[in-house]
Image (cartoon, rainbow, N blue to C red; front, side, top):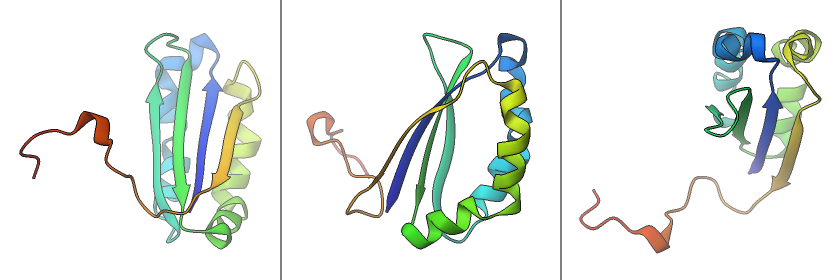
Length: 110
């Protein structure tokens, strides 16, 4: 899978609205057949920073994602709400889902 994590520093005046600002992009990306997940989180240390964790089935699905109209629209519209260019880690890994964190095994987990 292609595993991507990106940090978005949003202008403070838009930080509370970021989930709404990105809602159409998020919904459309999650609907892509090759998208495994596309999840936003807000930093507990910096309320103006959002972290996006996303994964796509393979290189083809990743390429299809960046070729979509909703991706192009996001690239054109979202920078107006950002304080800086997002930072990203993008890598291919040999798994297709989350693994369990063995060091924190929960007893009697279903």
